[in-house]
Image 1 (cartoon, one colour):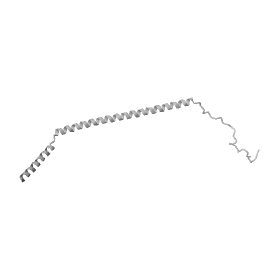
Image 2 (tube, rainbow, N blue to C red):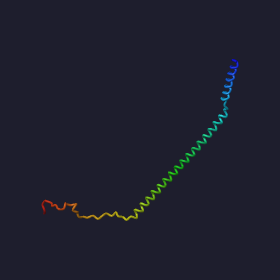
Image 3 (cartoon, rainbow, N blue to C red):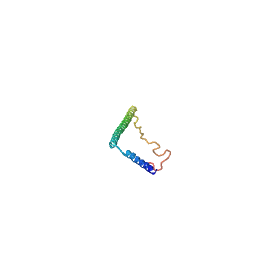
Image 4 (cartoon, one colour):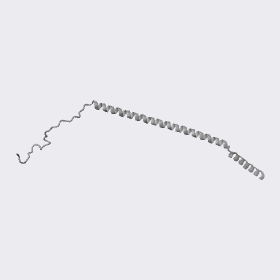
Length: 119
């Protein structure tokens, strides 16, 4: 019985060593091929992402240029309208006539007399 248990244990150890060795066996060419394909996929993904980023940047720049052109057109329209309104308005910037005589508020107060020698 002892020998049977010993043989059973030895066969189990041998089986586990063989299965472990089978798991450890790797085909290096297959690993290289998978790595190469992963690199190619990564490069393609990076190119695609860069193209999408350029497209978004170009769209954003086009939108900003369009808004800038609209603001410039609005400013020019407002300037032209203001100029037209200024031309159609009559000139009322003539100075008011000035009086050469002094008014009572500018001279001596009314109702007061000046004390002093009279000629």
